[in-house]
Length: 483
Ligand SMILES: Cc1cc2nc3c(=O)[nH]c(=O)nc-3n(C[C@H](O)[C@H](O)[C@H](O)COP(=O)(O)OP(=O)(O)OC[C@H]3O[C@@H](n4cnc5c(N)ncnc54)[C@H](O)[C@@H]3O)c2cc1C
Picture (cartoon, rainbow, N blue to C red):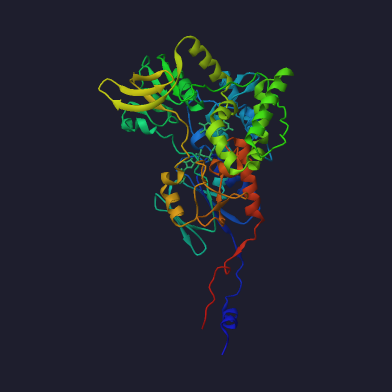
């Protein structure tokens, strides 16, 4: 009688020729599209599928707009979408003659293109790969993911069901969340809940006052969109600190920040940054040059900080850091300056403690330094930025994956846990070999991962990991047949 092992060995079907590995990317914003493109341009035998409900790949929340008032926050030269061709976006702008029809693009000695131009650029790069079938775009939202034979079964909301060997999660940005105290206003037609779809602003009367919750880049984008529509009413920006976004320097220079003796201490880095700013100013360099240097070093700094220091950063320094790191394009900075000077924009430092809808407007109770105040407004816009904190709860497919132990939140409220190779960390604390977290949802591991160049670098690294692995053989997962 044969032993079990001998029987299994005898009856394993002959090895089949290698078959393509099936990679499914969920989310086709900049992150998912950059990864799909990078994989598609390789020689590897891959089936690349992207699930993305939007019509175009590569645009996502940030660049899927036709609003000409919305501009990139950084100069075109810094939108390095493809690590192997860092001038591609600038060439696209020249080749398509965009700048000839966009007089205000040039400002502060650089080009600050429209956000829609970058969406078009990504579409232009992806379209031939889709047309050739190298990338398959399913215009569907993923509603479910199940483990299946060591791989995954992915379900789309229009009925597509696909199997995959490798899965990438790239559904980064949820919409902003209405503060708890203002929840009574959710669903009210006078609340602009999605600040990224600026067509909703057409409902606002030209002279109507508008109260904006949030005073960051999303808030000043809304201001630019309103003014471009001829709106002249007073816009009030309400945030806890009252701080407004900062402008870029008129010269784009970068300096360096010397690492402190205690590189694992937030206090050490804070001192290092302060003295770098003093030194820069003494040398006639703008403070912005220090924050640009910090951006270059920030992944290394973040990864050198222990968890407790990362938490301290998020609690105490994040807002101040972000206000300097994420800066306004000069066009919007000029608009904000002139509107502030004319009294058409004001900024209030306060916290909403209660809200109610009345027949005449929306009534909010605020807690300010001087006590309590009430403010009534005909329009309220929520511009507090994408809310990553409850990311798993916001997507049915992520809830399912969490229930199966495949993913877990990162514990810092930034997104999903992953290791340094971007592999998801499951409920048991171990990396899941075939599951990757791409883009801003992986910030807790990598640190700075919001800007296009940083995301592009992570996609390059994920692609290298995927391409380094051996192709699958269809017999690899076949069960031995016992006679
Ligand atoms: C308003 C804004 C302006 C920015 N401006 C700049 C800038 O000027 N320069 C810069 O360097 N960076 C900028 N950034 C940062 C950066 O470029 C973005 O964070 C980046 O585009 C992130 O892209 P993403 O694909 O990871 O996320 P997203 O843009 O959020 O894309 C995720 C995609 O997933 C899709 N999706 C969601 N749920 C599902 C589902 N269930 N199934 C399938 N698909 C799904 C969505 O439709 C979406 O298209 C900006 C960010 C924002 C939000």
